[in-house]
Image 1 (cartoon, rainbow, N blue to C red):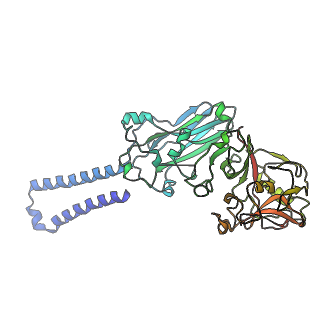
Image 2 (image 1 turned 120 degrees about the vertical axis):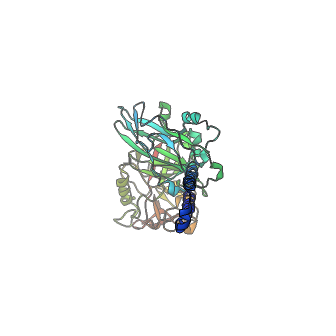
Image 3 (image 1 turned 90 degrees about the horizontal axis):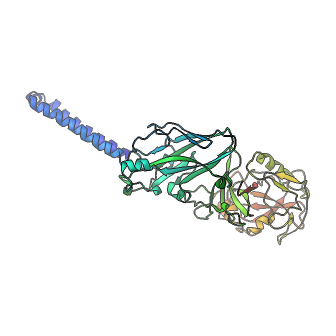
Length: 462
């Protein structure tokens, strides 16, 4: 589009310049130009410039401009105050694609954002949702209801995160974000909107009039866990990490029945007020869901570093994990005793290749934000000593994942990640871990090149 405008502009300048040079180069001819012809020449040159300007203006208007509306710079929704930082056109929450043209996601993420701040002025925690809706007032005024840009062509990014297509949020009433704010606190947002680079001639001349809307969440909706940012159905081809544009959202967590969310379902979760991380479902227990972090929480650490004995338990690894996750205020505390608390199927900590049958260590009762996966949980997902027995989502982000069917390597995490379970029966210094070859295997407790992935429990409702 930009090249087209420059080409038009340059062609007009070249034609005019050549015409003027022909006149200047011939002095005799210049003296013979009559006064009336001179006036005609000036009129011709002016006309050329007018035509050029009209052509350039038309190019800018391929995507309809938005009519100037009332300014919506400050809105109040219940106890929530929404302050929009004034846009160039002074229209606050009114989305303006004036002069827009299709562009790539990388270019769209560089566009100037629609910026706003949500402040909770009440005395209680308040939940909200953000939507992008049609601006029906402007659409009616412009009489363009039959000529709107398809939402399949509108791309959106929130706070610089992975872009998505607006039409994928139709099922939720075009809700693009949900959150909760403590009394007296604020949240800042930057929303960028652009037209999909894959758009063709079908979008020429189309209009798009939208607006950003913040709504308070009623008591029924508020019971849903507001820290669940988004959830995606895992797909080995189209949605492996949760950050692919081809991922399809799911609301399985709204069902309080066990196993509503399949193992591997991807949760984008706000672990505290400042951090959002990705997790996979290990098992859905009904009102709660047990999740494992997508990457290693700790890169490389010994299971127990003091001696090569598994009778003490994973003291070294757990102490470091507890330190890292101590401020994960939005996860449910886990209260457990090894050898007593049942994880998935039983309470045993010692497992052979045939199954888990003995308690080989006990530790003091723990109340923590995160733990490690148990061998019982891994086995329930298919992991055993055979290569490629674990689901693919369990062994990505390791040093050699792609060598065994994985899709993402991480050189900082060399060999895998620990389980809570010891290896039986004849290796008192060995414990189980999940390795880069997509299997369960065992190694010495003092091995410093195995990582840790946090396993947390969250509530479906709050």
